[in-house]
Length: 364
Image (cartoon, rainbow, N blue to C red; front, side):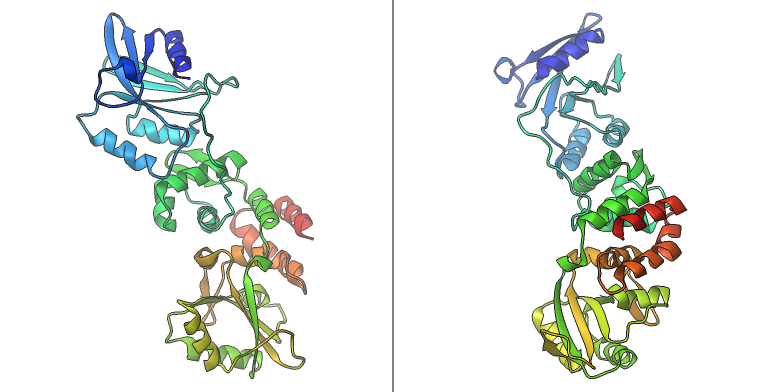
């Protein structure tokens, strides 16, 4: 496939020839490109990659800093605009099979955007698909929803969410291709929150979280006061969800018989100890006339608690996670999700009335 790259370079006025490993006497393995322009010969080492891996960015930075490395060019199947900008900022020569070429050497500069529908080469393996709604990947989209008016860089997204920068590149590329975000390089922003939310709702349901139910000998407000004081000294991470969370966020929800919360204990023993402090007794079926505590182990893990905040001294999930949980929840779940969307979530991310109506149709 490198012969195709050589042909593209020839089209741009160079004499180019591919050297296979057996033809090259260089110490570094791999293929090389021999270039000649205006009577001057140059040789470039080819870094051929089938996809952008999590470790590639660090590898490239090391090569840029290593003055002993021979001139080189990175070649991948496809480079999106964001990655091309990142490579140009670091002065890294690069090309892809759509016709992209960025080549800067002493006395030589070629910059072609590419975008050809007919690729000039193939790779043995293709890039893996990225699900932007998966557990760790969802942190990136959550960050855009949290600050919809801000501009984000891939580097800052990786730092703020705690994910590897290579994975952050993959996720932002997928979000960009879907049209949820726009921008390049260091300036990415949320563009289509409505589509992102519609597709996210289709990919997620609160039932993916493991659930346990308990009877507690308290009324709703009594239980919350008891739990807050009993659990305060512990390291348990927890937050109200479903109708219990919505009651704190939007205020009009009547929910006196069930308290639902996410809990992330350090281990099973910790959760059992804390449940015993509020005299919780596990049940398999609802008991009429009692208060039920529903404890959920979040399907999204730590990501589910991203953006949580305090309401009346109680931790409550973010509007985004509450909406996702309520969208498929029976017993006033959809009604409450719509109210949350209209009054808080939609306006906060700049949705239009038409956007909100579209989402309502999707979950009703």
